[in-house]
Length: 414
Image (cartoon, rainbow, N blue to C red; front, top):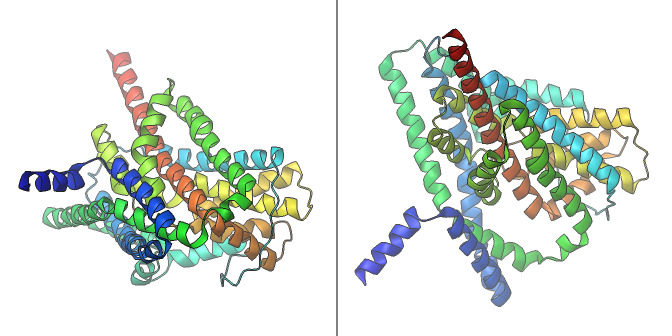
């Protein structure tokens, strides 16, 4: 009996996280079906899990970026710049796919009355203004409010300053980063329990009726994201590494995308992506910067969400969209997506920005956000899975391309 208990505990600690999450998902559905009242009470488990993720993610980004920059050896080359370029063009192409998808499969909305109090940006100038204000915010305030732009700026500045510190100081910073990473890994191990609580309470409260009402809109959203993951991203990776990209794409989706799908937080999935880069023997000075950076600005899934929901509102109101406006919307969605939060539901808060391009009132735009929240159970999970898997995919592609170039140069010199 004691051996069975030990093996069970060992499975919980070291077993497949994906398998455990699936078990938690199925258990949550069964509980909601058999005992709805108990399922609603189980929602506390999901709330605690999400709260732990939100609490840990800002601190994780702060210490990882500080540590990676502070411990970067002077003169050691990294490939962050080409990765950043891949992030930007990947997000823009994702928004373009959403425009095309919404054009061929136009969706309309059953607009709702929403009492949700949100203060969205009114135009692209407002977005840039908010970004600049976030840059100069107090670091404590940035951590408390999960202001990832402010966290990134402060961590970058502190990391650069600490590059000139003593080796003992750098070691302390590195140990702190590893400690915080360990805490996040422990939190993620509780994902099956959190998913159990989230799924059971959600189904017991709303059922699947809301999702069925917006099946076409959800299909367009998910279809565009899947197209980006299986067609657009592989084409970008092929352009970078010049060989079959799909083995790498599928590995990233399996090891990073599935975990991010259930945690619904790109920032919380950073340790998963960094562990994958470590197993593939990539340059640590590169991926220790690019992975946290990608969790903040590489938001192809968010660009899809902003664009599709905006055009759904446009189609509902009968507004005609010409090609230049569609291109501008893709650019705006790209810029807006780069400023979304690294936690659950960040992209929905910028949908009114896209709506404002077409003169859609803020009242109507808030109703569109409410629709997005109804379908957010699946939309946000798939969006996060796409975002996070793309972070590690583009990082690996850029590092492998750089290694191939260096090997070719060495052969040419012989």
